[in-house]
Length: 207
Image (cartoon, rainbow, N blue to C red; front, side, top):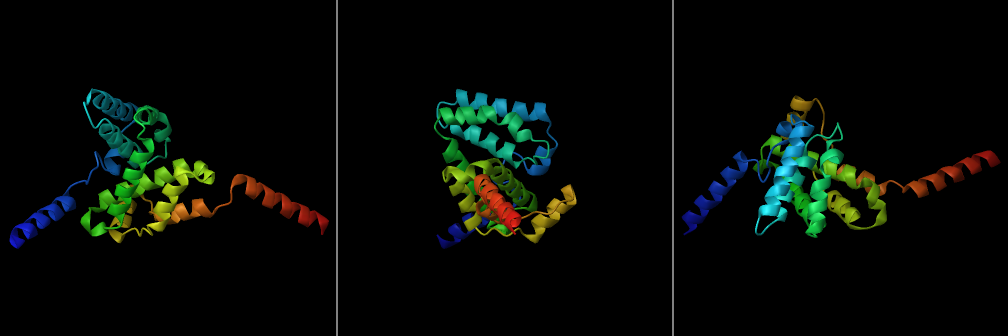
């Protein structure tokens, strides 16, 4: 029995090492997709969700993960995410889906030896993009702030293999999503920053 369990555990480990985890595509594959291709990916998953007799959120979750895992220098997220948000909201599953995907990404990045570097970078980009999208809402002390706090508290460290992967393919370095989340959470709210700036100006003019 022990030998059987060991063999099963070994097979699972080998699968994780060679698969792309739960990802439809890795970030490098997604980076080559243009607007039409990303729209097709999203629309196909929306159709799959509507036809599904159960688990309707699963195809939407897969597409949302792909959208946020694509490098976003061209603001692709804003162009294609709306149908996913609408359908997940109709299922009352938006926050649950974001929470699940966040936990999945954190789990992968906290266990880098289990996943290929390209998979690690994909999850890091997912968190980078997610944090960028929720940044304006963190000040409201709601769901988005809790997500940012979860990423910050995970204390993610980017592995050297992932850094090398990102540098090789995109000529960029990776910043820990935990550091990004911490910066978002510690920056003053716009109103507070404006008040501080005004106070500083008044103090200077009085001197």
